[in-house]
Length: 168
Image (tube, rainbow, N blue to C red; front, side, top):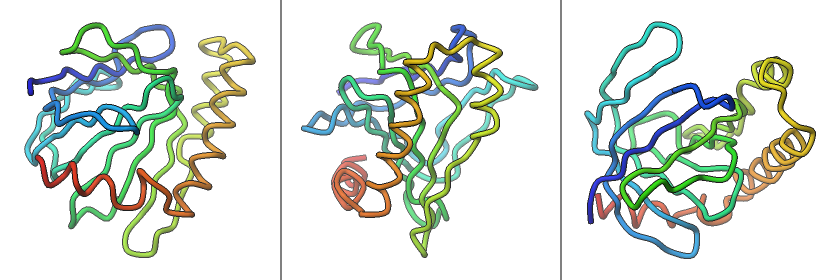
């Protein structure tokens, strides 16, 4: 299995962040990508910089869904981080583009609390980028569905991701 470049962009296609991951495999939930501890992430917003990740992680990119999720190995206090996105666009088997719509859901260890993050940025960017009403509706509905799934601990948010983390 080869490397996959994950390219996150804003709605206007401006670069947001990028990282190189390992393709681990595919299942009914989507394509699973892995990042060992120390993987370099390049951030293009604010002051451009690169940072090494502090924890190993796996990411699932579902087919035709308005989200993707990153699952973090312990001892990270974040269990899972979900980006609300326009459905992923595979440029090739080695590159995927994710259009970040700002809204994020985070589930924390050890208490399992789930928080919606960057709602203010989402509301601001509705005007900045001119998100069409159908994009706003899909993003907010997806956030509600993800919150419920994370709180109920349904797959792939329960334990499936651990199989893929073991593959890393």
